[in-house]
Amino acid sequence: MNILVLGGGGREHALIWKLKQSPAVTEVYCIPGNAGIAQLAKCLDKPVDDFPFIDKYCRNNNIGLIIVGPEAILIKGVTDYFEKKNYQVFGPNKIAAQLEGSKAFAKTFMKKQNIPTARFEIFNLPKAAMDFIKNPKFGNGQVKEGYPLVIKADGLAAGKGVLICHTLAEAEKAIDVIMLKKMFGTAGDKIVIEEFMTGEEASILCFTDGETIEPMVTVQDHKRIYDDDQGPNTGGMGCYAPVPKINPELMQKIKEKTLQPTLAGLKQEKILYRGVLYVGIMIVNDDPFVLEYNVRFGDPETQAILPLLKTDLFKIIEYINLGKLKDIKIEWENKYCVSVVIASAGYPGGFHKGKLVTGLEKTINLPETFIFHAGTTFPQKETDQGLTEYDRAKIITSGGRVFGVTATGTTLKEALARSYEAVPLIQFEGAQWRKDIGRKGL
Ligand code: AMP
Ligand code: GLY
Image (cartoon, rainbow, N blue to C red; front, side, top):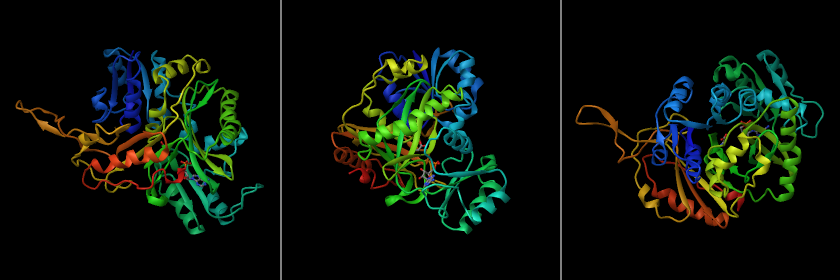
């Protein structure tokens, strides 16, 4: 079957790398892709939200399955659009995608379904929110009242819409910036204010067909830009899998308290969820609390998960789309995987682009090491006929996160050593990476 993957980050590179291992996959296409994906798939640099164009492109290329990477188009209804046109799509529909598209929707759902999460209040009006933060009380619960408070824009804000406020002044500023100054646009029409939880975070990505929910290997992301979790939040600076702290007993709790009730709640609300459900959890005193839902593969999490997946990914997707997930046995390598992100100077703020990348060839023969590309492209050059075309002999940077340097090993230590051996070999001006990925897992 011919497949189209939408997206162009490290997540999509890892997905395509894995899909290409399936004997059932003929050709892979990718919109927009990147310089690494271009080695495996036919890439086309077009917007992922131009659905009518993509429809034509799929017909011309005999594409039967569309796999969706980024959340924004899931929330926009990419699945509904293409399913109506009789394509197979991997990713939840518009209603189900509200679990990521609206924090208020997700929190209300969790409360109704008794899924452990931070206590919260939802506000549509800045005045009411301003009143609340003067004397924040969430009702009865074991966690202490007061500051810090977490203030979240309701809608998508590119990972920047969550503000942790230590004082009343900071909380006032957060409400002002989100609801009045509309820093995240209409995402700030509503806010969620919730209590602050202290604990260890982990990501539980799951396959689900709406009937069965099957967690993948557990993974821990590193969201802050600097070592020791300092500096602003990013999309994720690196991760490792599995997370040793999540032992079978804790995993059982996670299943019983969060995953199963989420699936049951969706069924109860007659929401058909097919695809990947990413449950972000905080482990507080050995108990899991849901921080957030994402309705897709995580990035960089997917880069550390897929090298450990033994089962054919295309087959898993087929079983999910047929509603038969329970009939396929999903198997994992008994190993660890680490992915260290190399980012551009300035990221997560305004970052540099167009920097020449060197040294990739030095990583080719490193054992169990995979370089997934994110923000990379080819420079353009002029041909003799005066046309512009890509100069595929060179690679330049084009995004904030540029590479996910990924490696497996029989121990976490070995996987880390392999990844960190490769990282400095890849060079471009202003490259930055964290030196402490996976340290918490050791
Ligand atoms: P979210 O997008 O809701 O997952 O929030 C982004 C990040 O903010 C999370 O990964 C946590 O690091 C942090 N965060 C969100 N909610 C809370 C909370 N209630 N308590 C502590 N940290 C939080
Ligand atoms: N790495 C966090 C995310 O994919 O949402």
